[in-house]
Length: 388
Image (cartoon, rainbow, N blue to C red; front, side, top):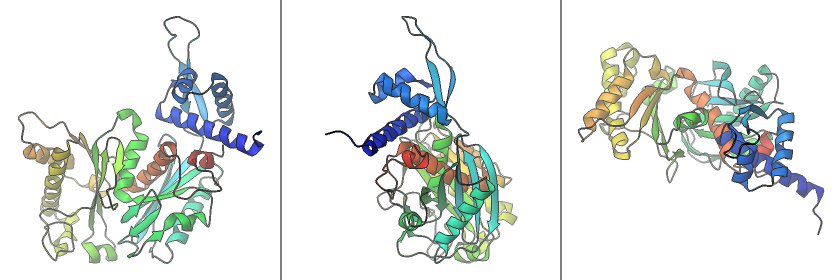
């Protein structure tokens, strides 16, 4: 039976997606190497690569070394970082921040604004923030997708928010389905600390990150945040073997100090009433950071992690937080040699979660072969996002 034209076009689009994904994972790869990896005919690779070059989705970078037998030098291929942009949004209790980045993770635009977020208006608010920001970027034609980061227990694979303090959400919200009813633009939602970990994976592939921890520390001055937990929020993004680990019930990375005491609204041994003044009391701040570092040290040394990122509002404090973390990691280490773990700032400050949410969207689109919601059978997110 002859193939229908629609089926043939779908296969071509999926082959194009496979080629793009291979180039993204392996920058400066050649046509020959792509054909070998994907087991596709050289003619198929040539046709698809030429088409992707015409679209401006990929670019030729440089010539490589000729093989042992001589012949033509291979031409290296890479993703065109300016082909499109991604929006990342952080949703908080009383505010949001939103960022646009290109495919290399370079920040194109950023803003933050106050806004009271409620469960009832959440979906509309997310869409309005994304679409208004896209207009500021010149429209949605080059928009690859939108990542949303927020506090809570979130199944990012299925796009379901199970529980969230910012939304006062105690029953599941099918974010993916609600968004899909309103737009075909890909949207993904994830826990804020996990988003930060995805951001490091997506935009720092060349660093070879494999096993690390992202420690997200936020200082919130809003009335709701101070009343509910003292205004200091901490969460972990855990990466094992280059994959964000979310746990059996998506609660991996949720933090409560080993020194916490019963009845305290804060996550630490320090009472919430004291913690709300922490940014004005250097000694209290150092006590909190050291307590956090001791909790991190146990985890880092138990799982033999080689890097700890420290990010968000804590980056602006005057203490040398990475040095305190390194000291406590060494103190917890039982061997004479130094632990092979580096503690460092993420350098993104207030942009950490929104930037990470953009990274989550990019990473998932370029590494996964499905979205939480499929659109008309287009299972590969690259086919949808890049209009292949």
